[in-house]
View 1 (cartoon, one colour):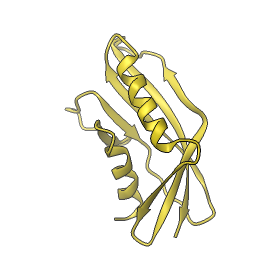
View 2 (tube, helix red, strand yellow):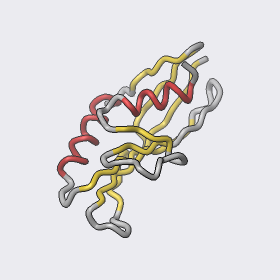
View 3 (cartoon, one colour):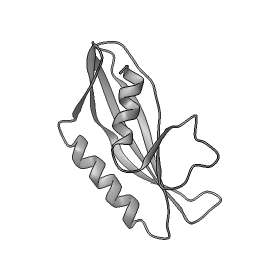
Amino acid sequence: MNKKQALHDFWSKFGWKAYEASSVPDNAELPYILHETSTSEFDRPISLSATLCDRSTSWSNISDKELEISGIINRGGVIVPYTGGAMWITKGLPWSINLPAEEDNSIRKIMLNYNIEFFD
C-alpha cells in the first residue's frame, strides 16, 4: 500500500464512506468524510484537512464522529504504516471547526486539521 492509499484507508476506517476531496461521486450519500491527499518526503511535514459531512438538524451525530476520530489521533498522534515506511498523523491547530451551512441548511460539516510526517 502506498502513501496515498494508506491515507485513504485511515479515513475509511471510521464507519463513514471516505472520499478524496477532489473526487466525490455525484451519487455520494451522507454521511461521509472528504479528505485531502498529498504526500511529502522524510523530514518534510505537511498540513492537511478532512471534512466530516452529515445531513441532520442536530450537531450531535457529527460531533460524536469528531470525538471518535479525536480519540484515535489523541495527543500523541497515530502511526499509519505503508509499504516502505509509515506516516505520523497528529492534530493540527485548530483541530476542529464547525463550518457554516451552505445552500442546504440541513447539512452539517466539521473540518479537521491535521499534520502528517512521513518516515521512509
